[in-house]
Figure 1: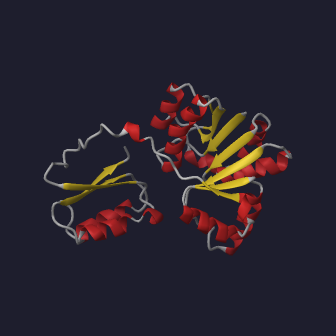
Figure 2 (figure 1 turned 90 degrees about the vertical axis):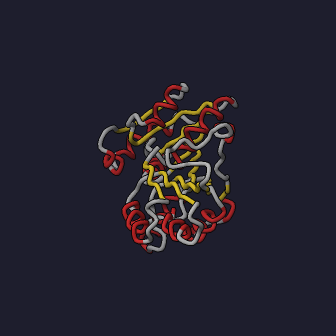
Figure 3 (figure 1 turned 90 degrees about the horizontal axis):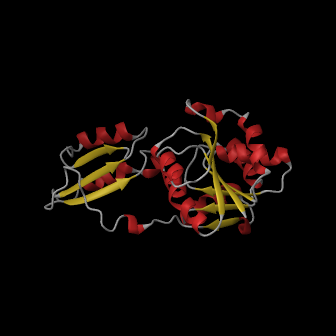
Length: 251
C-alpha cells in the first residue's frame, strides 16, 4: 500500500510535528509513505524527515503566499494517480486536494485530518456551503479530539460514519530524560509551560490571567509565536507578571 501525506509546509506547528514523528513509524511498520508539501522551504522539520530517508515532494518554495495559488490543484492531480491513499492536512491543502480529486475523476482514497476547533469558515453561511462541497470529496474525516469532532460534525451535517476520532500521539521516550535548562527555571519555582502558536483558539490569555491568582513561585513559559503574541505580552505587563512569564519564541 502506497500512502501520500500532504500538508502545507513543514514550518513549526502541531500538525507538522505529528507528521515528523509518525511517518518514520509508519514506514517501520512496512507502509510505503511519502510526503508532498505545497511549500518546500527546508525548515528544521524538513531536515529531520529528510535525514530519516523520507521522500519529500514539494510544489513551491520561497514566498509562502504561493500556497494560495489555485493552479496548484493541477500540479496535485498527477500525485493522486500514484498512491492508494492520500492523507491531507490543513488549509488550503484541504481545498486543493479535494478539487484535484474532483477534476481527475481518480479512485484514490482521500482522508483529511481536522486539527482545529476553529476557522473563518465555521459560522459563515458561504463558508459552510463551500466546505460541504469540499469535505464531501473525502472518504473519511479524522478529528484529533472529541471537541474537534463535535464541531466539524455540526458544521458539515454529514452522516456520522464519515467521521473518525484518532487522538494525536506523543512519543514519551523522547522526553523522559529531559530536564529544564532555561536560565529562568530554578528548583525553588513551579514551572508551567504551554507550547503552541499564539492564536485565538490556543487561549494563552486565560492561562496568563490564571497565573495572576497563583502563588508568586509559580512561573510560566510560553513557547511559540503568532499574531496574538503582542496581545499576551501587553496583558502580562498590565497584570504586573513580567517577572513570572517568559516568551521563548519558536523552538
